[in-house]
Amino acid sequence: MVAKTQALGGARAHLSLVGLSGLLMALALPPLSLWPLAWIALVPLWRVMVSTVGQPAWWAAGYGLLWGMVYYGLSLVWITHLHPLMWLGVPWAGSLAIALGVWVVITLWGAGFIALWGLGLGWVARHWPTHPGLRVAVGTALWVALEAGRNYSPLDWSPLSLTQSPGNLWILHLAQLSGPGAITATIVATNGLWAEARGRGLVGLGVALLVLSHTLGFGLYQQPAQADTAQAIALGLVQGNVPTREKLTPAGVNQAIRNYTEGYQSLAAQGVDGVITPEGALPVIWRQGDPQVARLTQTVGQTGVPLWLGTFAPAPSGKPGQYTQGLLELRPDGEVHGRYDKVQLVPLGEYIPFEPVLGKWISRLSPLNSYLVPGSPQQTFATQAGVGIVGICYESAYSRLFRRQALAGGEFIVTVSNNDPYPLGMMAQHHGFDVLRAVESDRWAIRVTNTGLSGLVDNHGRTHWLGAPNRFLVYRATLYRHLTLTPYVTWGDWLTPLLGVGAMTWAVFIKVLGK
Image (cartoon, rainbow, N blue to C red; front, side, top):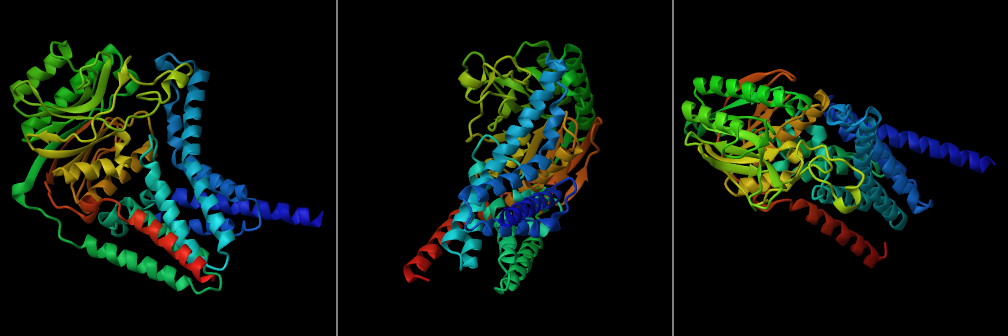
């Protein structure tokens, strides 16, 4: 009885520590951005994982799942703002169920990867109980590999690198070397060294890693920012502030056209090289002969400034019933020249995964009655003002999409989003992603949204302007075109496989020596 009571008390203590660890890491994310917490937040989780030696393997997986549910659950709670959806014809109860269901599914998706990490670290702790350094190496390599793998899935958000953005600009510059995984690896390894340092002298290594990583980041941050006036361009942005529930009605379409037309004309009068509207600014299919399309085409022809319009268009394949969501460059000649179609579509919102099964039970939340199809990953956005690197909506979380476009000659970043009906917390996280994308690629970035936060970020991650949310506004931004190639843009994420090979080699070496 005493043993059972002690075991129960120990389990409760472990659950509390794991929950605290997830909470601390979530507090490091925007909008609170208490980024120093990320450098200690994993210590309780790590120690609990190592202490599962002698317990069934699923204990470590369970602790990892709990950590992920706390961390991802808190960081993604803004998803519940999908509710209410009665304007789509969904009953109140069904609307609430959809919002909560999406939140739970996405939270569990992220938490499942942490459960796998816990399983792996627990296995290493059982097989190499006297090698804390190896556990740090394996734990770091495994976490980074799982994050990298998740970034190739349809759902990804809240990587550990986001905890440092936009506040810790020095450490963000490690992403120039090997992408966001370099930031994640440094955070995990530092936490691991401190967690394993009980009487083993690893505290000094943790301090050294923390200091050296920030020193290296500071050195990269101090590199002069190219500001050649010959490479300067002026772009205008229009934050239309038309709620989605209104924009998808005939009156809302007219309001959107009115807001964006007035904003476009105002910015054109200020002298810009192009005017950018957010994702889905014109919520109709772009077809020649359509009255709304004709009105915009005529306005651009009269004004003489290219318009970069967020809208829907027939897919390049020409197949009936297939459409893309994209950004079109409409020039004064009335033709569409530059075009970027969204690559990373939103599951359930823009398409149904496993549609033959799920399609019977889930109603799509897209404004279209037809399927959206993804754009080609190889496309470029060549405009009159230069070659843009484009991200639409939550593509900002997918660094690989931006890297490919930078490698193909992209000179500046343009991200366009709707962001309605989500709260300020989500907007702040989205801005954090754009800061990461700007730093890792050494590119200026302009962000244009429907409801906020629109902004301008330079190639060192410094925010030059951030618009107020939930209001109509226009802004003229000056940014600079870059063609520099960071190590990450050139070579990609080379650190993740290197960490994996290094950890496995170390483990084999120990086994061969029998120590």
